[in-house]
Amino acid sequence: MLGHAALVIAARDLMERTDPATAGLWPRATALLARQALEGALDDFWRKRSPGVEHCSMKAQLLCLPHYLGDEELAERVSYAWAGLSGACHQHPYELPPTLVELLGWLGTVEELAAGLKPAGN
Image (cartoon, helix red, strand yellow):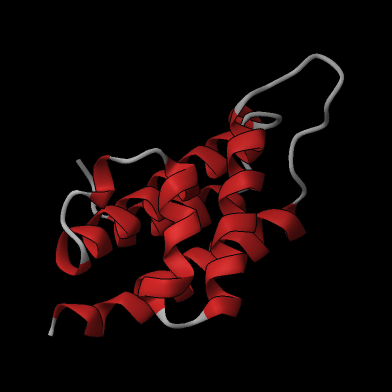
């Protein structure tokens, strides 16, 4: 399985590529890759900071995140990004896929989370 950094790179590659073969598919594929990267980063974080929490529901993990992360604002944006990405991964007949701007914002949050978690392993 790809690491969360590689997943973010793949997601950004999908957004930057204008290929008729991926027209209409890339927004949801990008959202899926970004959500996998976010969940992978959180799994790594929980294994280092509080082993066992990674086995809890994502809702429980996100509720605990502000306390363990120490950055309430980032934790809120991570929760918002996860909710947006999760919604974007599930196609419904009358919903539009996420926009490029939404995806860029969510991916930025994923990258910020992953960058902020590196010192947690020290």
